[in-house]
Amino acid sequence: MKKVLYAFLAIVLLTGCSCTANMGNTPTKKVEEYLNKYQTNDDDVVSDLDEVLTNDMTLTDEERSDYNDFMKTHYRDMQYEIKDETIDGDVATVDAEVTVRSYADAVNEANDYRLNNADVFDDNNTFARYRLDRLKEVTDTETYTITFHLTKENEEWKIDDLSDDDLRKLSGLYGVNDVNTITPDNTNDINDTTTDDGKTDDKDGVIGDAIDDISDGIKDTADDMTDNTDDKSDNN
Image (cartoon, rainbow, N blue to C red):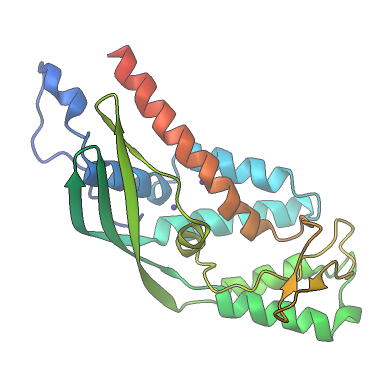
């Protein structure tokens, strides 16, 4: 299933007015709500992180906790600015500039190091720990423009599923090579094949790359955000 700009403060507080339930029902407000949930480590986001990391059996309990804290810090430090909104009937787009720490070089370099130094990793010195230590050293940031697509359903604006590239941008993983995940027993077997274009493809879906899995899990978080908004509207 994104953050440092807490722009979701009410400028005008209205009470006793039935229209307040729809004050946030604009494409821009929906995108702000979506990104703010990551910045504030909303329960939906934290729950998603917990589920993804719990299911990754390659991590020790300590590594799982450290990855959890690392990603929550990443999302809290995210910055964004809404640049444009376009509405055309029941569809809309919102352009947002999102600034995050960029981990692609660190992950790619860690993967390359493992390929060339497989003998240094064992149960006491796992690749997951080595990679996390490299990620913690990253200070460089990257700014991406993400175009959010929205559709109005039953008078409620909803964010369409983000592309895999956009999810990776939010997680700071855009540009990471889709290769070289570790196996569940923390050994260094490489379960990938070479495609016709010379790229490496991890066909077996090994579960070792916890951070990359988090990007996939964000899709479910986005759906949960929309469902929760609908439930609140129905209760009102």
